[in-house]
Amino acid sequence: MRRLSRAILFAIVLLLIWAAFVACGAREGWWRAMPAAKGDIAGFLHWAEGRYAMQSKGNIAIVLFDRGHVAETFYASHGRPVDGNSLFQVASMSKWITAWGVMALVEQHRIDLDAPVSRYLTRWHLPPGKFDNDAVTVRRLLSHTAGLTDGLGFRGFAPGQALPSIEQELTRATDAQPGASGITHVTAPPGTNWRYSGGGYLLLQLLVEEVTHEPFNDVMRRMVFQPLGMTQSTFVDPDPAHLVDFYNADGSKAPHYRFTALSAASLYTSAADMTRFIAAQFPGANGAPPGRGVLSPTTLESMRRPQAFLYGMPVWGLGETLYVPNGAGSYVIGHDGNNYPAINTTARIDPATGDGILVLETGNPTLAREIGGEWTFWHSGVVGLDTLVMFDLRGILMLFASGALVIVIGGFKLYRGRR
Figure (cartoon, rainbow, N blue to C red):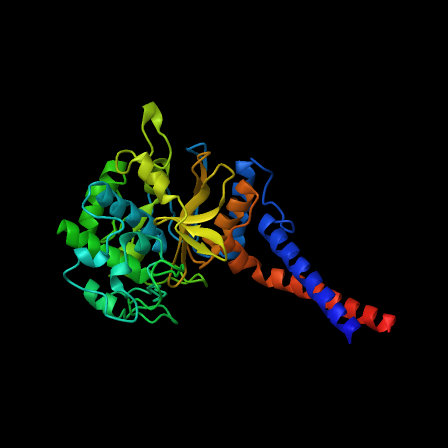
């Protein structure tokens, strides 16, 4: 019996070692092929063009940045042509730009980052519950750590449908994605765990309107778009002459869905405008500082500091995703977006080098994120947690299971042989 116990213990130790080896190898990309040689920007773009050709029947815009400047671009469509001025609906990438508007109000001392959001609200309040609503701060809403577990996810409203008010959407979103409750309320201790919340960003939209007494889009245009030269960008009423066609995954035309949750899902912008936004993350010509006067460099740095963790790894700052460490004391940052039925976007940049990628596309619900994940690995040598979960998890589990099976069978045979 003692020999059996030792054999089981030995097998458990081997399994733990194997699990750590697989996890480390997956994170470091030991079993992944690089899409292009290190530093070969044109080669990476050629790989990305091939992924579009194989996986999409819609349209796409790709911009690659090298040291803060545009290095390569690619535009393609199976329908009407697209170019740098074509307007895409960028889904949850809207949250990154929204965070700039909120932080601009913080810099003006009109919002306290660590104050309860309830301090500023009159039109709607979080419903009472088990946890303290006053612990829901602006900082925690920006970083998805406010204890909101709505999981929103907005599907939007089809042409001809009336849009509900912000207050109605916060009470119960009628366009919630499947599996989401649609109710914005506190159901976990604020400040403890990261839980993605579209409802939290809708609450920030209401906050901006309450503080400024202006419509959200007007505030964003005045405080962010105009100073950065993003002349085409808007959260409402995009120019139909420049708006791209929307596609389903099978290549058929999709409806243009509209949103009450502007801040979370409804930004319309072009590759040209997003290029200006991304360039504003870095020092500019003639000594122009990062932030370009919309935000200070100090605020930009604060937005990149870890605020939320998942599996012990930093995943979110203030309105920004932290994809992987960049080897310079910070992170590759940005934001992804996914809207129903097949809109997918990503922007990822390394603040230390000025390198980055922007992908706007319709017609495939995951293609932009796949390309962005490959760029992250190609640039940093580290595989992002989002890529591991969305694209690699099945292979990782199969590899672990295969090794575990060998360990269990080998241990059993060794035990039987010794007997």
